[in-house]
Length: 467
Image (spheres, rainbow, N blue to C red):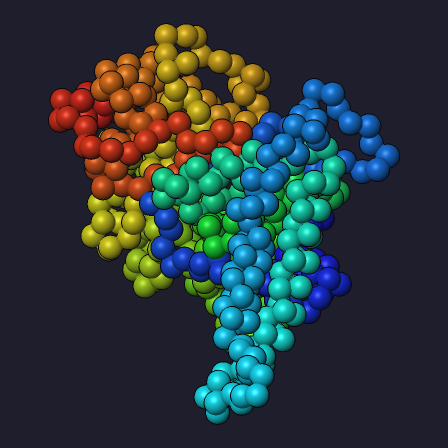
């Protein structure tokens, strides 16, 4: 499995300065105290595959390597190592231009002699750094060109979300569900608690994705891991499991090394707590932010947000417990289905009063907010198993309005003339909310954000969502 530390070790094989370049690329990824206006809960495609081994046969239905290679030159030109090479070459040309030879029979002035000496002193390290940058570029070239499968579509999809303001990404799917409790849910582990092949496959694919994205698009986004313990085992069980969970996320490559030689940290973690009747969430947040090992000076997590999107009752008890204990989360996520209705208004109001950003969780219902679902029967859960829309469909079908209510909401969104996805996101934005988008990383965003909706359209959308 690929991890951030492995990148550093391999880079040192190229050169010490090459390792420094890659380390700097990782370090430039911002440690965000606040989440971005759009948080992307990104699932890998339904059948994510890592780079195949030497003994594996290529699968004909997958994109062949020659198609992937056609777009690699563009990606290499836009990569961080390539830009570093160009910068260093320009700087070297500038320094070399400062050096002047004395004409025959003449001597250089003291000023020119000093200029020559300073330029020659600067050129040596620059040439070494250029060699290292070119080695890093060649390493990236190898990463992009190896094997039959590439994460290129996932990177391109993420960058389109990034252009809209979605610079925080939550790894979805099996990786998101990694915790000490789910031995049955999603079949992530077998009866002995060992990770299954499905989990290992998706984890490896995510690691490959993060590795390539960090090299190509350094500083473009922050990984926000989601810690989702079983609340009914109690707060202490979650606290006990958290140190191992953190280590797992960092091993997958989601950690950021802030200083050379320092242990990687997780910039931002979401704590999912869908059980308002189980107390103790404040103690979990406090533990998450503190040192996880005896004698450590600081923790491995810089910021925590509270994800309440799994509680359809939208009970504000977990948030109020945190506020009372003065462990204020950076943001709170409420179910998107209820974020604009009376059901969700208590949590949103409490967050607003406390100066906490409120997010409409799963704002597009994993892709169910789409015109292709308007006027058609509900898909079955079996059809959507393993996709971002699976849990959303279950919640829609279990809601008081059911699929008919969802149809009414889609109709109200379409009536705006904006497109149902854009209208849905705009309705949240107009209400002062930020959004979490749960989606497969196969395509870019299906929405845009623009002028506020007209009041009659906004009212119709809210009425349909409240039915």
